[in-house]
Image 1 (cartoon, helix red, strand yellow):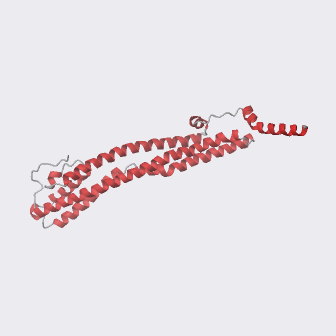
Image 2 (cartoon, one colour; image 1 turned 120 degrees about the horizontal axis):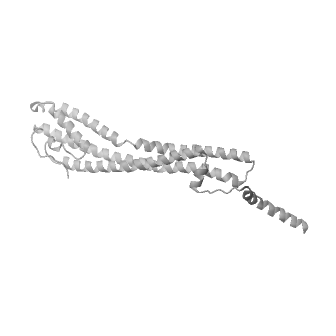
Image 3 (cartoon, one colour; image 1 turned 180 degrees about the horizontal axis):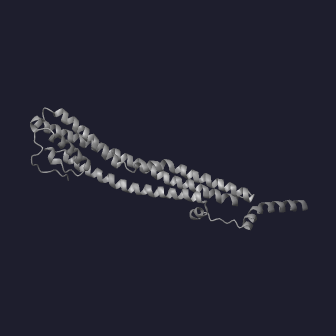
Length: 259
């Protein structure tokens, strides 16, 4: 009977030891995100700050590129509607989309280089030079619309590794603290590891939206590029008709501004 009482008392004392040690040492940690950020090492804080800035940059680029691409797609739709009609190239010089208007200006510029009476003779050269200039217009417009997309790709690729660096640094500091305290009590180990893992969470929060926005922006730019190709085809068709009919591009014509 006495032996059993001794065993029970030893077991109960062993079970209560971690709790009493934690209370006695005063290790009370607030494991909220704000508290863990404040208690983290300065390197981990810097990593998380960089990732927060990356998230803000992703949101800003997303809002701006959405507005930019949507406005250009609407303007291109109106320009395509205008280019589907008949008339001289000069009547389409004021299209709502800047890329489509630049294509028309390129075609008019090549026509003006050749006297009206000799255009049928140099028709192939006019078409080739116009096509080359239209390709430059398309490349320039795509380059302008792609600004900022590379930043999204870089954030999506680098943010997880930046967060992982913060986690490795935080866990390393946690193990150094364990060595100095000479205890493996979970109440001592857990808060430091949780603070370190918070950096990885920040990295994922920054990377996942960046990748999604990058894919969305890339698809939207690809769709606008298809419409630019349609506009280029319409301009080349108008140029071909004008060369065949021998119309003068300088004659007065009511401009087609689009609806």
